[in-house]
Image (cartoon, rainbow, N blue to C red; front, side, top):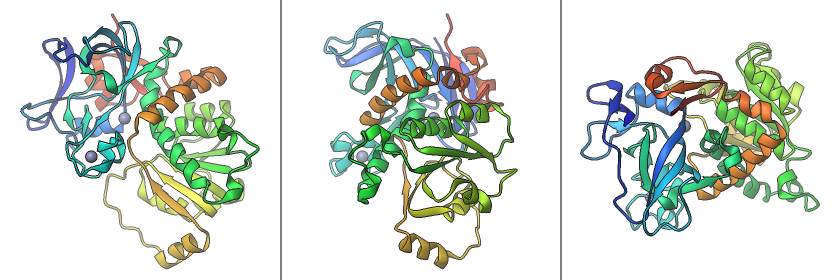
Length: 372
Ligand SMILES: [Zn+2]
Ligand SMILES: [Zn+2]
């Protein structure tokens, strides 16, 4: 079968042929891969900045944003059957008894950093025609989401953030309105999304679905495919080339929530200063380069104290977030079908996957498709 492998020691990325995997344990399932999304993490692994092959292997099969179809199940698997569509959870628990999070099934909060991640750290990923995996980490997706379900994994980042956000909102009673459902708790609140890549736009959809007044701040000038998605979901798009950060709040009013999905530290810092009273600032981007920022940190910390602000970093996602992402994607797809499809403008066959990963993205989200 065909697969995409990264050889870190040889600094090579290539399409390889290898034997199809077979089920060896009763709790395993075999998947025929349908689609795999490509993100910045894959690009970094392919530039050898990141990524660890499994022990004893000189290569890592990459790909973690996956959609597969179950074609075979082990003898002990009862919850899945051939024909089911599944999105796998990426991170797997560390082996340590002392890790309270992993032992409780919350490996996205692992305390030891000895977790593994499929396609990233210590285990092979999903850019392969067939994969064998443990059934307990599969999240079943309804058949009618087949066309867009490759977005589930990137959406889990926003879902984990929103789950924590909801808990944080409860610290200040007026944020939670008992007359509203959990889904409408954003009503009357302002959210700013930094970055209009797939993570930013999916986060904006999640915020709009919860009725936040949502602004998106990104580099590209209007109109562009991202600003069109923003418009379709009822968010307001500002280009940083037109509107400087210092003038943001004159257009947005006080910002209750920032959802950062850009990973550019000077911007992350500048916008922190625009956060309003009782504001919550959620960081999901990972800055790559060391950057010295000259600033009055006393003023920044003073503001954070005097305004009751929260800065929250969040990474990866747990089983709960995958379930929430599947439910939310269904809502987005019903409400804004064209905007959701616009994220996935083009599919690239596995034979051209390496060029696609190393080159420019196809549309807003690059997707490798296993067409047969
Ligand atoms: Zn990713
Ligand atoms: Zn752990």
